[in-house]
Image 1: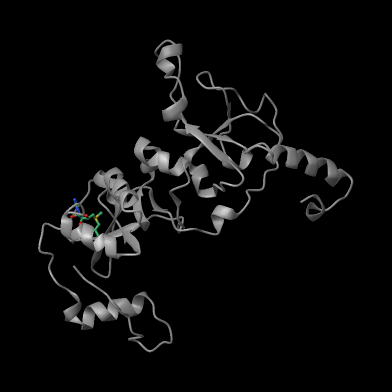
Image 2 (image 1 turned 90 degrees about the vertical axis):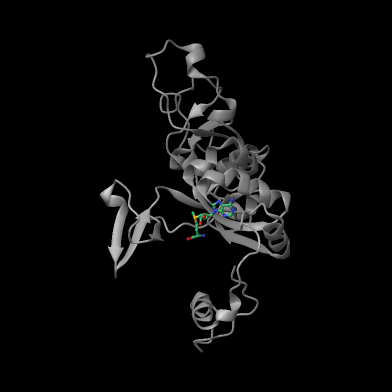
Length: 266
Ligand SMILES: C[S@@+](CC[C@H](N)C(=O)[O-])C[C@H]1O[C@@H](n2cnc3c(N)ncnc32)[C@H](O)[C@@H]1O
C-alpha cells in the first residue's frame, strides 16, 4: 500500500499535480508499506482504509465491478472508477444510474491503453502496442463511473428533430418509440423513447428521466414472435421527459414564433 499524506511541489513548477505524485513515489520510499492482510477490498484492513478516504479512485477488476460498486455505496463513498462499458447495463449498476447515484465521468473519447508486463499477451494484434519498450493493451470500451458532479451532466442536450411515426418506429415489446441515435431525440414527442446506452454520456437528469432499460422493462422478443423472425437489437435506455418540460417546450416553441427570447419565457 502506498499512503500519500501530503504532496509537496517536488518539481517546483508552481502546481501540485500528478507529476509531483510520481516524483514523490520515486524519491520517498517511506510512503510504501505492505498490507497486513490479503489486500482484498472486502478485508477489514481495506475497509478501514476506505472509511478514512474521501474519494476512492481506482480500476477495480471488471469481474468484481458490481460488488465493488455495492461496496462503495454501502460505505457512502465518493468515487471515480473505471469499468467496462457493459457495466452500464448490469442490473445492479443500472439501478444506481437510474436513481442518479452514479453516472459517467469524462472520457478522452479514444482507446484506453493499459500498461502491462512485457510478456503479457492477447490474441488480437490490434489491441497491443509497444512504445519506448513498454507494452500496452486496450481492453475494449471502458468508462469512468463516478458520483462526483460534472458540468456536462447539467448541460442541456439541444434537440431539433420533430417526431414523425415513419421515422420513429414502435417497439413490438415495449410501449416506446425507437430513437436509434441520441442526436435524433425528437423535441416534440411526449411518450417514452428508447435510446442507445451511449446516451448516458449526454444524460442531464434535469432534462430527461431514465424510466428503465430494455433489460428491465422489455418483454422478451421470444414471447411475442417466432424464433428466427426477429433480430435482437442492442440494449436501450427508455427515456421520458420529466413532467412540465414539454409544456415548457411547447410554450417556448410558440413564443419563438412571436420572437420572444428564451430568457423571456423562463
Ligand atoms: C484492472 S486491475 C487494476 C490494477 C491497477 N489499479 C492499475 O490501474 O494498474 C485490477 C486489480 O485488482 C486486483 N484485485 C483483484 N481482486 C481483488 C480484490 N478482491 N480486492 C482487491 N483487489 C483485487 C487485481 O489483482 C488487479 O491488480
